[in-house]
Image 1: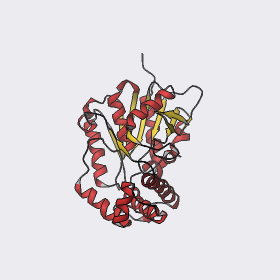
Image 2 (image 1 turned 90 degrees about the horizontal axis):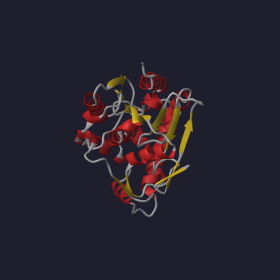
Image 3 (image 1 turned 45 degrees about the horizontal axis):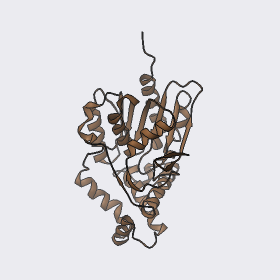
Image 4 (image 1 turned 90 degrees about the vertical axis):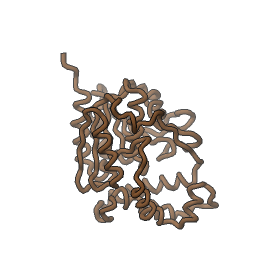
Length: 290
């Protein structure tokens, strides 16, 4: 554990005695640091690799009051004496990596953005309606409203589990696929991580997010770090569209599309994602030619 702004942050790190560079893994909002179970040890054969649970997630302390996750990321790097790193972010972890690259460009050697979010981007109305129909409807509306407001006298574990399964089916499998698209191991891991997300969200203290200003969505051409964008072609359409914005908006960004893959490619397609990251990082940290 480390302390960032008075909050305990759970983290793990590994790597050789003389690493070729440092890599920080940033988890999705529906997950925690366990989603990097395959990439963490493989990348640590060559790099110093750090994965952590952002505040309010996993084993880290609660998110309370105003929270700024990209500032937390830079504070984690400070605490671990990391001057510069490649950032690998999934979902909103990718959004925070982009914000960090804009706020402190000299500290970001490269960006790998997997099914990434983008701060300042407005999700399309049809995506929000699909979430209401497929996910929010799994819990009675009156109870869901009280859970979200933190005013429920108790949280029913059955509601937490129902919400986690519905969200995993819609997003991790993808709206066009069914439960059978995911192996039992991937399904159970994703549901368990998602269950903890909703449990903490509904039972913990209230918080609000502060993002970079001006928003990242209008500043992509400012990013000068080498960038890899990975998108699952079975992911929610609105999220795939963000991958398109990132690939088109960040100078010289490269994009990899993974067929039959939902929102968490590192979990569902571990070998493919690890191979793509290995190739990308070898280029990011290639020795300078003289």
